[in-house]
Image 1: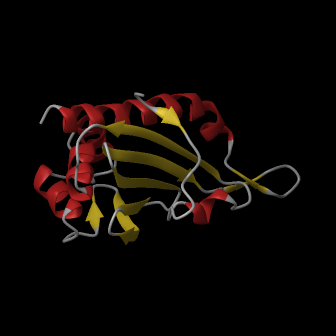
Image 2: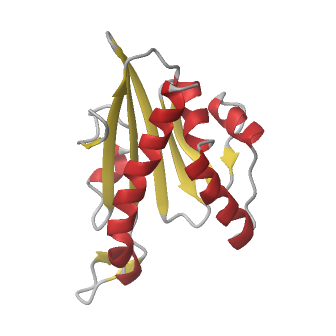
Length: 167
C-alpha cells in the first residue's frame, strides 16, 4: 500500500467537520513497516521538500514565515502556531490545524500497529459562501481547485512517508 483514500477513524478529531453542512472533508492513509513516533511524523510532514515549497509560498504571499525549528517545536507540542496555521485541537497521536483565515483544517494522526505505523492525513474545508438556495457552499474557487487538492494531499502524505522510511 502506498497511499489510499479512507474514512476518518471513529476517534478522529477531524470528525467534527465530517457532518458539518456544506463542509468538505477527506482522509488518506499509508503504512510504514517501522515504529514512528507521532512527533517524528509531524516533523517529517512539515519539513519535506514538497511542504517547504508551500512554506516558501506562505512566507512570500501572506507573510507567514516558518522554520524547521518551529516545525520541531510544533511536533514536540511546545508550539501552537506554525506558518499559516494554529493548533485547533491535539491529542497524543493527532493534531488538527486551522489556517489563519479559518477556512481550512489540516489533520495528522498516527497509530502504532504490530507491523509498523499507520499514518493519516486529512483536510476539512468549511463553507464560507451561500449557495443560490441560501445553504452553505464552498464556492466556485474551491470546486475548481478540488482536483489539485486531492493530488496534492496524496503527494504530501507520500512525501512524509518517504522521509520517514529513509531518514
